Image (cartoon, rainbow, N blue to C red; front, side, top):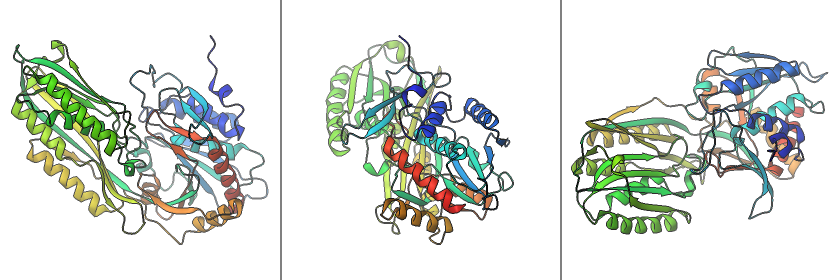
Length: 498
C-alpha cells in the first residue's frame, strides 16, 4: 500500500502555502541539537526562492527578503521562530526521529468538531514549525504587502535556547521582531518566564542481590505529559513522582534499587517512568496494593483517567547490581522532597504562574559496583529571585542526600513593555480584523524573546501564533482555523508596518 505524502495530506487545507511549507518541515528531521537536515532544507529553500541567506557559527539562519515594490524604505521586520522540535513518541510507536518524516494526520477535535492536524503517535512539531511556515509563506506570497523582512530561524530552542543565546547584534539588522512561537490565537504575548536547569547525581555502592529476593518491575504510563511551561498550571501528573510515591509508600521493608528511569526531555512533563527493585517475599503484592492507591489519587487529584501503574515480576538479569535498602530509602526520600509543579502565582498578572519546577528526567547508569542515578529539573520563573531560590532549594536537597549538584546560570525572562510600538500596532490591527480586543498577556513558558533582547539590545518584540495544544507530547495538535486566523493577522500586521 502506498503511503500518502505529507504534502498530499494537507493539500486541501487553507492557507495552502502555509501548509505546504509545514509539510516540507514535517518531512525533515529536526530534533533539538540535531538540526543539520532542517538547516540544509531552509538554506536550499532560500536558494530556490532567490533569497540571500546566511548562517552563524552555531547554525542560526537569517533569510533576507526584499520588500514589496514601493515599500523598500519601511523599517525591517524580523519574523522569528525556532527550527527544532521536541521529539517524543508513545512507547508503542515505531519511529526514527533521525530519519523518518513526521506522519501528518488531518482529523477532527472530538469535543468541538474543529479540523485539526496531529501526528501518528509522535509529537507534531507545530511548535514551532507552523511559525516558520507562516514566515516563509509571508515572504513568498505575492499578495502579502510588506517592507524588508528577515526570517530568523534559531536552533536548539527546546533543549537550552543555545541558538538565541549565541546571537550577536550584527547577525541581523531589524529591530522590530515578531516571534511566531505562541500557542493561543487570541493572545499577544509581551513577556515570559526565565529558567534554569539543575542536575543531581547520586553515586551509590552496589552489589549482587541476594538470590532469595525477587526482582520486580514497576511501570507508570498513560499520563498526559505536556509542556512544562504551558501546561504546568493544569496540575498534570508527573510519572516520576508517581513512581517514587509507589515505591516509597510500599509497606515492605528492604526494597533495593536496581534501575530507575523516567521522562526524556527537560521541558516536557514526564508521561512514563519505570523501576526495577528487588524485595522479599510478599513485596510484589504490597507494591500492587500501593500502586492501586497511588493510581487512584493521580486519576482523581491530577485529572489523569488514563493513568496506569503496573507491578510485575522482572527477570533476574535486570537486577544484576542493587544498592542497599538504606541508600534506596535515602534516594526515594530525596526525590519525594524535590518539588514539581506550580510553586507560586504572579502578583502582577492575574492567573499567570510565576514560578514552577519540573522534575524532568531520571536515568540510571549501572556499574559493576555502583549505581549512578541522574536527575534533571527545569525551574521557570518570571522572578530571578524566585528562580534562584528554587535552584538553591534543589541544591540543598541534593547535598543533604549525598548528590553532586550542578545548576546553570539559566536564561533571562522577557520583561513586558506596555509602551511598545509593535504592541500598539498589533493590538489595533487585531481589533480591526476580529472586532474584539486581543488578550495581551505574559506566558509562563520560555520564549526566546527575552534572550534575544538581552543579546541584541534595544529591540521591540511581541509574540503571537495559532492555537496548539499538547505541545511536547504525542498529543500535540494544531487547529486549522487558528492557523488561518494567524495568517490573516500576520498579513495585516505586515501591511500596517509597511
